[in-house]
Image (cartoon, rainbow, N blue to C red):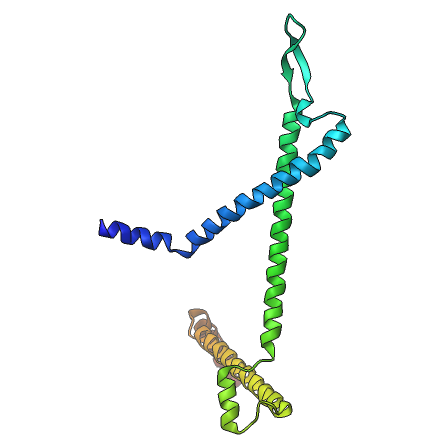
Length: 197
């Protein structure tokens, strides 16, 4: 029983479970907004365009009872309303997702721009050791450019080392060895022909 509660606690405290709970709560509130938008704003315009009190009233009578009332009808208004509901909800959700994704991208860019010119704690310590004041913008800029150049040099050296290792691996392959043997045999044949002349 103790293991059960321990597993349940681990399950319920997972991050994705909390995200799901938040999503369900926001989804419930969002569905109320969408329902109100459809029922109170868009549907009245559509029913007004069709000239009916309600879209659900649109129907084609198929069979009448003895007293003249409609006993069987083709209620195409309900179907149209369901299709419109679906399309409107899909469009609204699509727009919301697009807005959220765009805002996340803008926030990320703004955050990168904000931190681009800021010094890290290691850089601040190094500046202090070098005796450079953080207020001296010219020296700080020169320090940052030197650090950037050093990082680029290290990156270039690592890439050159990696390329050299790959070339060394290629040299050890059978294909490379066969090519070397062919070249040696060709040189040997040319030397032999020269000596015969």
